Length: 255
Figure (cartoon, rainbow, N blue to C red):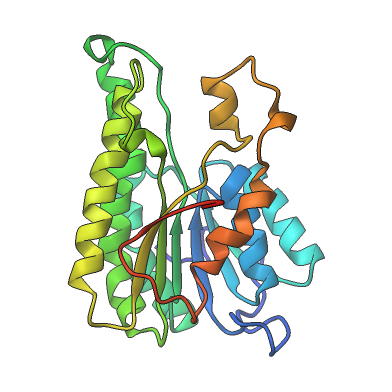
């Protein structure tokens, strides 16, 4: 799979942006980049100078993120595909980005699936496959494909978006909580394995944020009463900076 072939729009140079930007010349891969926290984080990383490779299942949403990045003077490449249905495509992302850009510096796995909020005994195989596939299996595949170029980067950074539901199980949230718990264990294990390399791997818990997933879980909540994606994106993007020294930590927004 070619990173360029999956985009319907020409990509600008990954070196775009002011030379003083802390991420100038770097390439960042962001999943779930068509809306919400993923889109806001991609915009922030582009503002910091990175060329962003945007992954999501919705072409139109990716194009909106791309438009916002370009309007601000940044650059992006689009990779529209489904992390579950097209899971095998994930395996080619790392090699494809190295072939196209010669590097991969940043991985942000933000894409997530909630599934139906239902008793554990009522979780359907379809929901289980989608939630585990997006939140856990995709994380494993991303680690596999991105590990070599991230280790080779001068200051490789990987951030996985998680949730406080891991520490605080709640009735009806079983599939979501279990998938994120598995992802946290996997990520923290990887962080230990790369501890003596320049690569830094961390988890980020944004807390309660006005996203489509939050609206699905809490349909009666006023979205204006909680944090917005643009509020948390700078903190997430900061974990991708070369100056970031934390390793294997769960960083809670606002803590």
